[in-house]
Image 1 (cartoon, rainbow, N blue to C red):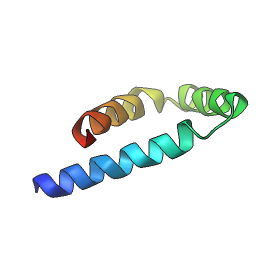
Image 2: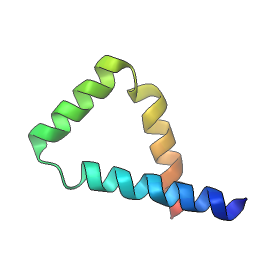
Image 3: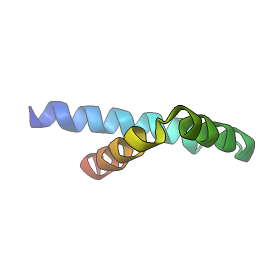
Image 4: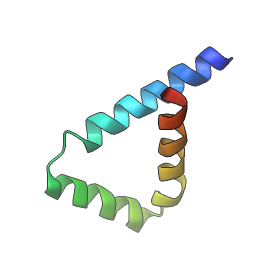
Length: 56
């Protein structure tokens, strides 16, 4: 079970890095605005932060 959680956390971390770190500033602004407008910033950001902690 711990292995599954760690693999899932790594997958989330890799997805977040590929979306966030490889995007231009304009794309980052669009993503941030969409997350805020749709209300997804509240559940998504803590999940990503926890996943990054577990993955590392």
